[in-house]
Length: 315
Image (tube, rainbow, N blue to C red; front, top):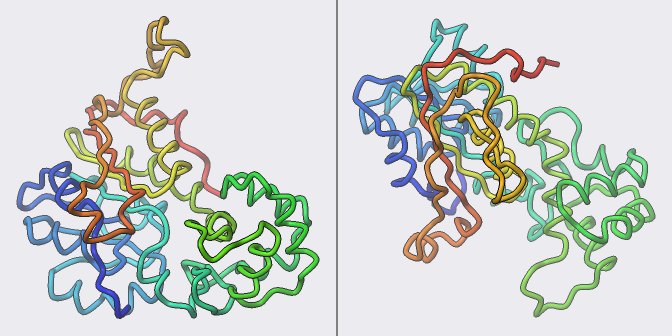
């Protein structure tokens, strides 16, 4: 396990949103180091926890056994299918913690961090296309599009050109140096300019936004009437997807102008009006600076049937 202690973000607030009654079945979409799952089990829930990272599964099994947690290897987007294999068709609560974990960031050999040199991997499942595979084979235009779309990097074309010129890239240290040279970097700068590029490549390699969209649909299908959904995101792209999904599936969307009425949903709302978004307080930020960008959104499932029109086709 990582030497740094794992601190679940917004744990108290997540548990408040879940309002667990002992005996209920709950899903933790990203087991990680087991922080949310352990707290849910302690509250009396029967917990089914997922993780696509083999390290998290292997290292978390002893904790899961101790706490009575069912630990399932696989993507949270497949929770409906994987739970069905275990005879579970509905649950009372689902928690999703989106993005890269502290465990992954703190291990240079996983290739997620620009702060320590390691192989240019970035795969959460430790399989499939790596960051090096993508950067060393993709067209410059495609690299630029990924960095712009997922990293919101305004100078993405300059970065992509520098990456192509520097190929082959095999180490995180190489990539960070290339991006810093392309964008300019001074030691006193508050934010490393390679942050956005690393984020973008990681999201692309792991199909994180597509996974989130499919997980939201699966959650809608799995939650029983009155079931609670709690989602913690860490940047605007993720939060926007969650916000728009909950707005759409709770029965209304913005009318486009504050002077116009809200547009009513064409199907019965699957969720009640979402709770107000929650951000970490100063006490939590002092204890865990990585929580600074976190946002919790939650909502309660209605009894409306799943709208098939809103279910995306499986690849």
